[in-house]
Image 1 (cartoon, rainbow, N blue to C red):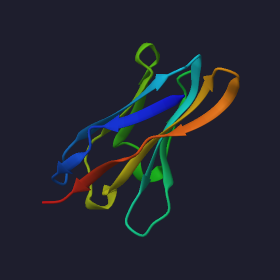
Image 2 (image 1 turned 135 degrees about the vertical axis):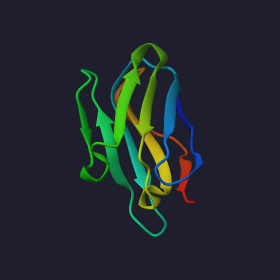
Image 3 (image 1 turned 120 degrees about the vertical axis):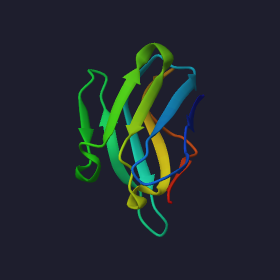
Length: 120
């Protein structure tokens, strides 16, 4: 069993910053990829940022230059630093991890989501 829990969402004014965290716990041998997705009202869930086990990252074009993804392998945690937030960044942000757990080498685990609201 592996659980993933996000934190750090909330209300912020346009131009402000937030840092999301996501931590995995349970029977974990290693975590390969970590990623953040978001889903706005009435929209599909889209990839925002991803980071591989080697530290290489990819960002959606809409957040490049504003968001940064990083990971702390010792803490089984991934972060999303969000700067210069815009109203269109409002969404529920979900963390997804690809984990080696027990005999399952390719387990994908989603968090429950954390709401980010950008409004004045």
